[in-house]
Length: 173
Picture 1 (cartoon, rainbow, N blue to C red):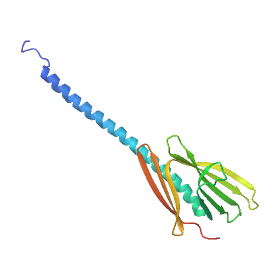
Picture 2 (cartoon, rainbow, N blue to C red):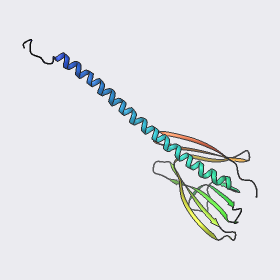
Picture 3 (tube, helix red, strand yellow):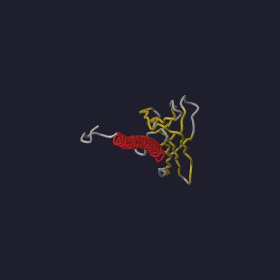
Picture 4 (spheres, helix red, strand yellow):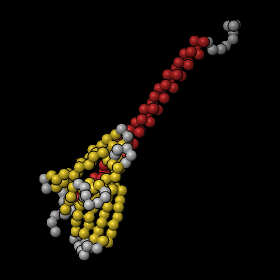
């Protein structure tokens, strides 16, 4: 090769290739970490949202309840978590809320809410079922200092979240 010919040397090409490989490797690792972080954040957000949903609905109904039964009612074909009862101050209608467990394929539970309303003569006037929360690992409602404590643990992917709610029942009529 003549000295006047311009071109790339083998050493120059190897150094350039090594630098490009390092940059590409770093970019690939960063991309993987960003994707995994987004997945973890999504799992955590899902777990938190499901715990909040369960906490909101159960707390709201327990606040209104005059009577709370914890555990399953063997007289029904479904597995109840809790059953809450109260009487509407204005109409005299009787409300019954049944929170029931549904099994899911991943070993976690789903929580649904059945709202049954009867008029003051005991005639059914409304019967609605609502899906409340998913991904529930455990839930517990226990009596505490004149009120109730609801503890809900949910899981989504690799994330687990626990939320506790203090519930105070309404005053006597």
